Figure 1 (cartoon, rainbow, N blue to C red):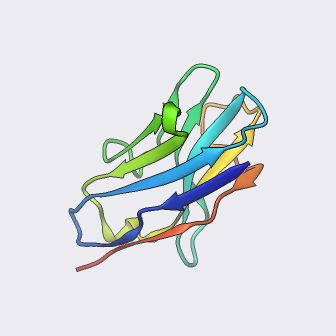
Figure 2: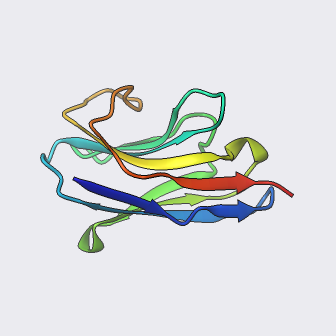
Length: 123
């Protein structure tokens, strides 16, 4: 499995950013493909989790309505469009894969992590 996130950077509050993840080598058709973030001193948080079995995407309350995940299967790419960004969105963002998980929220355990990309929201 290969997961490579990119697209992070510095953005002003209220701005937008789109992250990309090149994903390949999935070991199963039953999986969660997700974006997680981790800020210094804070717990890791799943910000979008796509469930392959039914196509549902879970967003936590902290980002719902502002973040949108999408995919281009032909290019094996996963995207995270982030709008109305806030300083508290500052974190390292990772794309991640978990197989055979059927919960309704983002899983606590992840099988595969990609290298992260830093997002900084600051004026």
